[in-house]
Length: 85
Image (cartoon, rainbow, N blue to C red; front, side, top):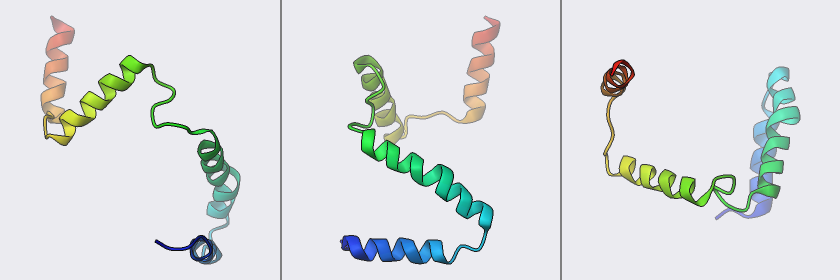
């Protein structure tokens, strides 16, 4: 793993090579403060969810990981049937 100093140098080089002023402004005013704030306050992936919501979300992620999904077309068809029933 790279050292902290190497990571800082790489980030500096990436930012140094950005010529788009609007992008730099967005990074400075929106993205970096958001990331820093999230990092400082984040203690867990699902902290803002109830235990029941966390359980259901983890189960849904596991289903998707196993390939237990439906296409958008199948979903729309089932939704249309549910709405009209």
